[in-house]
Image 1 (tube, rainbow, N blue to C red):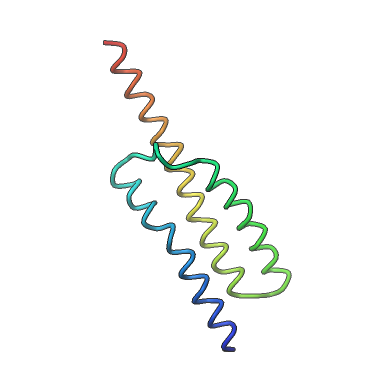
Image 2: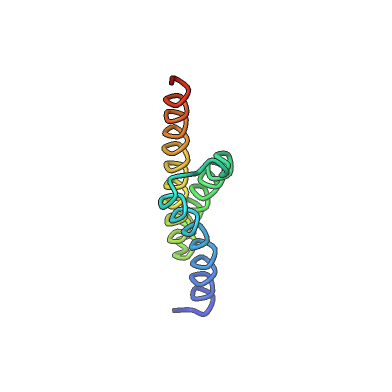
Length: 97
């Protein structure tokens, strides 16, 4: 494997694993109120484009890490939508008393 490919794999891994703490925290706390929905949506669109760019270039690091990061961002979006909705339902339930 070429040195530049190894460098690309390492760089992609370091930038991609940064999403994992947010996912773990959101899952554990069941709260995503302070997380922007716009950011992971825009990042997901960009990562999808980067993935297809990597496919065109047949560049493993670009394809691999952008596909993984895209999946992680979709998880963030899912958590935001799920826990914000649940939070509103709980709040509405409390108001009805």
